[in-house]
Length: 245
Image (tube, rainbow, N blue to C red; front, side, top):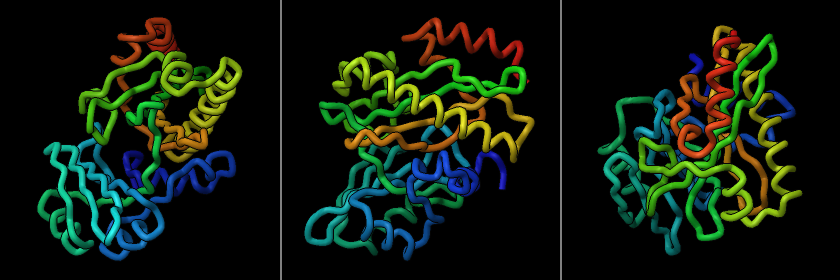
């Protein structure tokens, strides 16, 4: 598998004790795996195994009385289906021509119920992985993904944690440390399998129980979000790029 394979990276990170507990349950998608996952979790994400920028993503929520809600990122369409067979039928019509995975849905939302995630920008400098910055990304209204390609808005990490999530200063520092450690450990693990990559973006979520999750690792992370809300982190990225290898 290549470095852009979501399932490949899940398998690598699940093998390591430092990251294993932070990886959402992920399976290659089939009708039977979708059924099993929706019996286990109230929501799941269907993702192309090898695409970036949120392309092709679909969220499926389990509703009462055996019904389901589907939200399709590319068409911004929301659809209700009476049973899982109808969910599968619609998926086949709107899917990208890629292999898909089905992943446990994580409720990473602000106090107002708006989805968010956090991008950790990491670089390998003098043989050591370092976090240049963390930035929050808050989804636009009714969106299922948070990146700027889907209309997400960047949020300074301190403001996200304290104002949007209600963390105390001590709680904020603790979760930042956890996220930075997970980002560095993820990068170290992935780079052992793919050593030529020296700059990565690690996408993280925090659920209502304040558990930190690793969503995925990106190989071509931009820094537009940092430019808008955290110029110091942006400058670190540019400076460290000159020494990264």
